[in-house]
Image 1 (tube, rainbow, N blue to C red):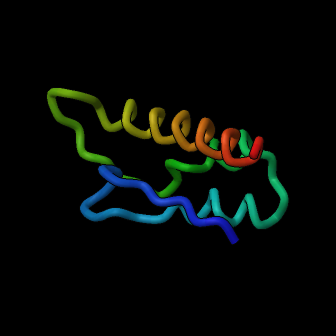
Image 2 (cartoon, rainbow, N blue to C red; image 1 turned 60 degrees about the vertical axis):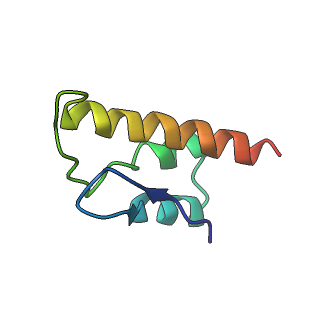
Length: 71
């Protein structure tokens, strides 16, 4: 089963369990990446809001999964 790790999405690094489960069940990379921010609680600061960080997690996980699946 593939592992997907996230940083800056909570008090400690965490795994995107919903994304990993979706991939294990055969979901497409984009569908699995849409779940990347589930269960996260990123902090907001002057650089980014919590909502933006969650959006960015979904986008970057999607890009990584699509790149990995094309190899």
